[in-house]
Image (cartoon, rainbow, N blue to C red; front, side, top):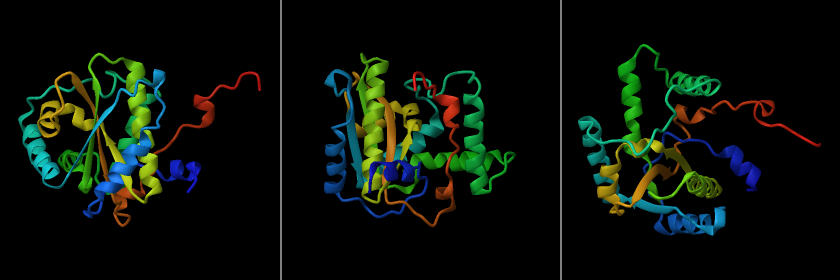
Length: 221
C-alpha cells in the first residue's frame, strides 16, 4: 500500500469489531509514528494505550462522569460562534452522519444516544490518549496532530482503523485516573483503534471535502 492509498482509505470509523489488537502491533505502530514531523525535534507528545480491563473500567467511569457533568473541558474543541464556511461544513458532517444512520433531526434522544457511543470507543478494543505539557503552545499542538495522523495512516496499512476523539478532552479527570498521567500534562485527544466492522452502514460515510480551489492559492506557477 502506498501513501496516497492510505490517505484515501483513512476515515473516522465509528463501528469496530471486538477482536483484540495484539500488543506488538500497537507498539510497532506507535514506534513507527515516532518519525512524525516535529518542530525543533521537540517531540512534545505523550501517548497512553489502554486495552482489556483497564479500557473497560474507563468506559464505565466515563459513562458515570458524563452523566454527572462535573468535569471541565481542557479547551474549546470548536471555536465559539463558528463562521462560514466552517459552520456549514460541520453542519453537513452531522447531517450526513445521522442520515446514514437513519436518525432524523427531530429525534434528539436518538442522536444523543448515538453520540454516547464515543464513551464505548465505538466498540474498538484499544483506546489511545494523547497529552502535551501544559506549557506547550500551538506549534506543539500541531506536532501532536501530525503524530496522530501518522498513527492513523500506519493503522490503515495494517488493515486497522481509527477514530480521533477530542470528545475525551471533556472528561480530563476521568481519563487521568485511568492513564495516571501527571497534572502538568494536558489531555489533548483520545483515539479509538481497532478492526473496522465493514458491515456497519456508519462506515460507509465519506465526509465531504472542499474543492481545492477553496483552500489552495497557487502563486508563481
